[in-house]
Image 1 (tube, rainbow, N blue to C red):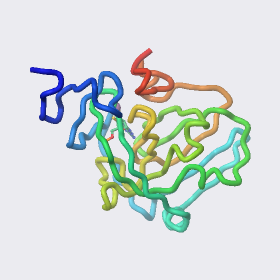
Image 2 (image 1 turned 135 degrees about the horizontal axis):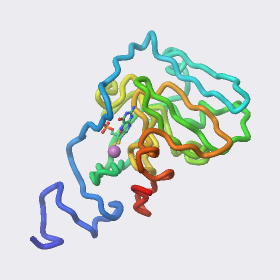
Image 3 (image 1 turned 30 degrees about the horizontal axis):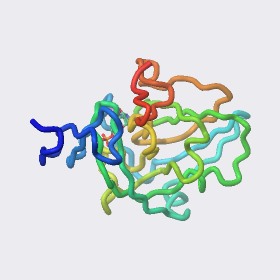
Length: 197
Ligand SMILES: Nc1nc2c(c(=O)[nH]1)N[C@H]1C(S)=C(S)[C@@H](COP(=O)(O)O)O[C@H]1N2
Ligand SMILES: [Mo]
């Protein structure tokens, strides 16, 4: 097998622009979930940002839908080595959600329905880098992929993009989430291959 001749998706092509080291491209959209898929209705769905002083800022589904909505096209990179180019999402920017929230804490923990957690520095949620996404490929996000809504932080490995997201808690110090406690990297930059630690 030549390095450059393969026309098959799924083959490793180290010279592909936009493909981080050690990743291969896939056309499919694998489902990776550590547990069962929670079923959360729009009626019961809520999203809460809790600051370090315990103040909670909360949105219902309807309140989320009333916020400015962003269309996002981005590549995604899973630590299990698949990458997918040009995925299309619709969601609300974390910049919008954090607008008017006062915090001096530098770290966050994302919480999901079902108990999953993952830590992300606040700076990586700001500046047009992260969204609460509720549509994929022009359709409502499937429950298997995190619907009704998931975090989308595509510049980090995809485990940071918490499915069924229900909130974010601000933290003064970095603390490991679910996979980070099990050996995944605290930050998870695919370009530096920060898979495990
Ligand atoms: N709540 C929750 N979010 C999660 C996970 C999970 O198990 N539970 N898995 C993570 C991992 S390891 C990856 S690669 C992506 C997979 O998203 P997908 O199933 O939509 O491909 O979700 C991330 N977010
Ligand atoms: Mo993953």
